[in-house]
Amino acid sequence: MLVFVWVMGEQAGLPVPVAPLLLACGALAGQHQMSLFMTVLAAAIASLISDSVWYYVGKRRGLGVLRLLCKISLEPDTCVRQTEAKFAKFGLRTLLFAKFVPGLNTAAAPLTAVVGTPYARFAPFAFAGAALWAASFTLAGFFFSNQISRITDDLQRLGSWALLLFIGAFVAYIGYRYYERIRFLNQVKGGRITPQELKAKLDLGEPVTIIDLRHPLDLLPDPHTLPGALRISPDDLEARHSEISRDGEIILFCT
Image 1 (tube, one colour):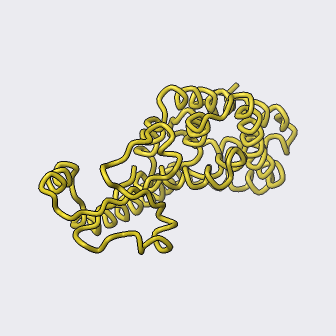
Image 2 (image 1 turned 45 degrees about the horizontal axis):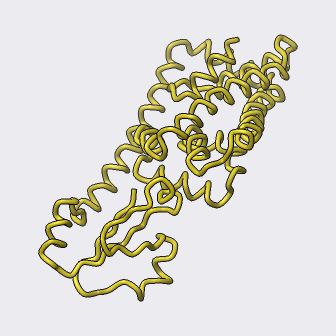
């Protein structure tokens, strides 16, 4: 029951780490104190329930829910693009490894609904991916149960220092990622233009070339674009650069 509730909460978006719990359950299974099969099954079913909720939210809300989920990720500026790129490349097979990729984990389910995949096709892949994810951590704990027990004993001897070290490492990691994002935003800040500024240029008839960089999946729920914009994927920019006029400013936009 603990595994079921914990995994369901984590897959729903709560900031609770599941990997240590699954490792601990695997270690207990290695000591014949828990069922390995029931642990994996409980985690897979809980994950499928959460994924199903996100699937139906994506079906009703479209790509808006994907952008919302990416806003709370560690890489909000590239999360949407990375998720769409992986799904465009692997299709439903993305669900088989999505649990192992931060950012793609929760976002893959609503994106599957956005592209029109029936639930009957979504559910088997989602369950298989969840079972593979849960089994990987649980089996790791199972095969290294003795080593995990020794690590646990060492952590108990450290007492509160172990918790402080873990929190310190986590805060340092988040701080580093935040610093990298701020540095990136400062680099591109000078090259940004607001929608109002762009509209003023168009109204005045200034020579402006607009490039629509959105992924093809973005166009499914929203096929509209800006007046006169060229639709070019970032991957095709080099091959199609001759289509871009050099007379006047070049404006790029995406999601």
